[in-house]
Length: 248
Length: 319
Ligand SMILES: Cc1cc2nc3c(=O)[nH]c(=O)nc-3n(C[C@H](O)[C@H](O)[C@H](O)COP(=O)(O)OP(=O)(O)OC[C@H]3O[C@@H](n4cnc5c(N)ncnc54)[C@H](O)[C@@H]3O)c2cc1C
Image 1 (cartoon, protein in one colour):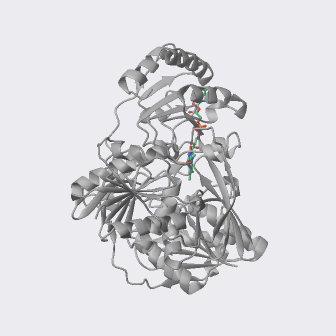
Image 2: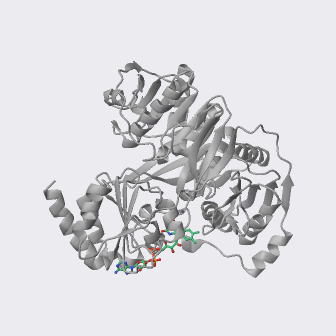
Image 3: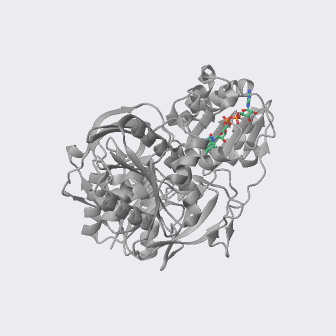
């Protein structure tokens, strides 16, 4: 089985979010970048397929040279090969088109992406790849098994879960649950050394006219101070929620 | 030319977010000088849509469509959009809408914006305001394609009345092969879901152990609320993963979010910040949640919550 794991390179979850160039660009100054958590769950699951079912795992990112440490980290965790499509990730639509090309050229059986990336929260890349390559697609995946040419996938739905089966090739939008938090792997020294020897192929992008664009950013207005209510006066809390906030 | 709104239903009844989607569609239709067409799939009664500005309903009824299927539903909406010559399709931010919309986007070659907060800032160029960086920022997002898809953030635009009369048309789209076969569905039928709830009662590690969740469920019952939890609580197995909210869990955009024994870590807050009103109950007045909350009680949950339940019961009895 050939697996492709799509890796988004995103600011660490504790990052302060600021903008530069008249609020048109994300300010990367002092920001630590990580493997998008939703993608890391999928990457970890792919390690299981590698170890138990002999899968070959390639990771891919669409981005500039600055994303290579993130790909190297994925290699150190255990992926066999990495691909970087050499173009800035300007929007979900164009990233999906670049990735669809990689998927088509590489003949992958299983493509695991994250439900959404924690920076722009677009939540569209996995579905768009499926649409572009006409493959089966399951989003919000919280469990994934593959037997021969068929996958059994559980997806989270409002108020519960649904288990489906689908033939490969299959695109997955993954999230926590596909593996548990405790299954996540921290690269060890040996992994880091080996990662240096593994192939990281840089591909030229295909030409795409941008169809969507980030024009400007704003930060939410500062919040007013909290109103404290004494634990001995909970009637006041109820009254505030009823009369002032009008939410009960 | 009309704006097409996808009206989600569950067992034949509209979901609440669907009415927000209709209201939003009406606002765009007014901006563009056109009308709103709704597409419904196996909805029983559609007249309610006339209260929210819908002028035409394309009604699809087909027993084979009872279970949601993203590819098939996306194809049906595509056929409706093409039939209507639609330039803007509006969907919700539900799990199912977010599943089908990227497929629809490819079908229609339409730029797609998720988590949209308001009616477009401008229609030429077409720019919408959306949340990004998990609620830590807003993004002005421009769509250049001829057809556009907008996913409206829950509880942002609101449900707005606009009386209309709607023509109703039975619509029989072709149904494609799907490739996805449902094996089983596991769903609590009588519980309020986090996605649909107006009020969410959420608890964290401050509750000490799973045996103490009875009062959290009681509080949720009195308020008709859904229950949620912080990430460590689900990691520890005290509560099911489906209750985990925050940056890596479910997003919450309720009217009222009550956080009990939750410190308010940045990853937690990011996911719940679009709730309108936030209440924190915590023993530690230095807990970061107090900076994010509207109302706060510095106190022990084991004392405060049982009292709050009693007082709310009394309050409800007088309503
Ligand atoms: C990549 C990443 C992603 C993450 N994603 C999420 C996420 O999606 N959601 C999430 O929730 N977390 C997330 N976290 C974890 C987050 O950083 C915090 O660790 C977590 O939110 C803390 O949970 P808590 O508030 O329940 O526990 P704690 O931080 O331990 O807080 C417990 C609180 O309870 C209070 N307390 C104790 N006893 C009582 C009492 N008797 N009465 C009242 N209050 C009491 C304490 O004062 C304290 O403030 C993520 C972390 C990382 C690194």
